[in-house]
Image (cartoon, rainbow, N blue to C red):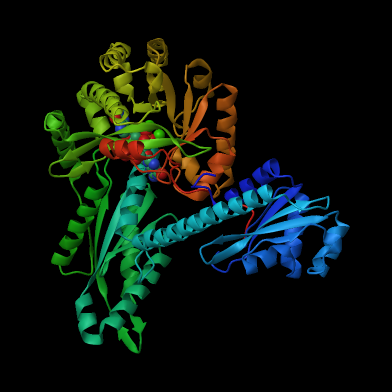
Length: 603
Ligand code: C2E
Ligand code: CA
Ligand code: CA
């Protein structure tokens, strides 16, 4: 029995194994202990299931007696037994002739009982009895363990939930906002629509608190949250950062006028007075607006820009909004500066490789890792790869950085192996279009692999569809050259680009990575499910494997599992981590990542 199995799976396995090893015709388990939150039932077949349910239903039977008494209850001939008349009558009718039940107990705890059924009368021999009680004891220990783990998980899920939301207003916290902002900027870059931030700060909130007391202040914040939420579009996010600071994240904007309109609506919503615990309060707010420009915007920078625009509004007396405006020239200048900084980044050791585990969907064990570029800018903090990579492409640095990260990954893996990780972990390495099309790319890959003693079959290069649009003939030639080197090829972000099915037929891909946009839609919209099914069918039909990206929840994990995605990746299993952390994880355990699925068939 695996220790990370959910309770139901432990029981299901136990009853099937027992029928194999002991001279009985069926077996079942019922848990009745009050400490165990649900009543789990497992049975080796339909007849055993009926007997289990029957005892629970009528509240009588050997199973319940063993569970309550903590000692085995033996009924070698049901026809001659008088202890359980109601149960016996119904069970005999169904062809049952003997029952032997063993308590599931651990220390002083009584959890339920293991029931062995036979369709012929006669005793169990002492060896079989000892074996049955031992199995019952082991199962009980596992169950208590599993229950303790479930309880812990629930507690940590609750803690996580509360870290993501503000307890007073129930609005998303800063952490959740930053997360959504990252995603929004990404989506905006793909869709060509704009993202904007409104930083809303009440004028004179302190006076309200001082005059009427904190409970009125709190009421005001809650009322304000309600009003503001009412005027947003679906998909926009309203978060509370601290005190009287609220932030609105607007997505999918075509032009600035739309967000100016939102700022106007915020102002008029707040212009009406608030009735709170017997007092009427009038407030106004200062609002700062910032847009995600094209190319070089870093989400956290966007928040900072909106914040400084808000201060500008305050400085001008409050009750107004200001738009943070860098202007085209300033934006271009900033991009150039960032590009220049990237030049020396590698030498200053500001670049790093992080790794995100990829698991086999079926058992959630790590089979590979995707290497992800990290750049820590001395002034600006973390620069997202979506910003750094295009900069590197424009300046030509991408060839150098790409080579560095491939080599880094190969060496890191060697290090994990020398630290005791035995299995061949496959490495997934992102390759940008410019990098792929640079002269001699395949030769560079071959060289790095040879230098680091890496088996090419354990490296997967991930490319996106963008590669094929411009020069598809050349791209095909490069991919074929890479196949000759021996590496595997994955088509990344599948479904978000041009998605011509022709590529799949003609290009030598081994793997399709389903974009997280579709994974996010699983269980929410029908289209995503249909698309994922189609992609899996298509890929398998063409002998490719499928990796699901961006699996964040148990529900999504369940969806990608049942839809046949071979491998999965996402925060649900593990976030990207440093090489050292992954090495540590791999050297101490190779246990399933993430949580087991919610228990099926119980409750
Ligand atoms: P990608 O290839 O799609 O990589 C996966 C991205 O999804 C990573 O973002 C990862 O942190 C994020 N992610 C992983 N699990 C989840 C999840 O459950 N939910 C959500 N919402 N996101 C998840 P990251 O590290 O910011 O990388 C972004 C993109 O930058 C990558 O997208 C890839 O296209 C590019 N990139 C990263 N490293 C490199 C590199 O070394 N070279 C090149 N050329 N591109 C890179
Ligand atoms: Ca990728
Ligand atoms: Ca991807």
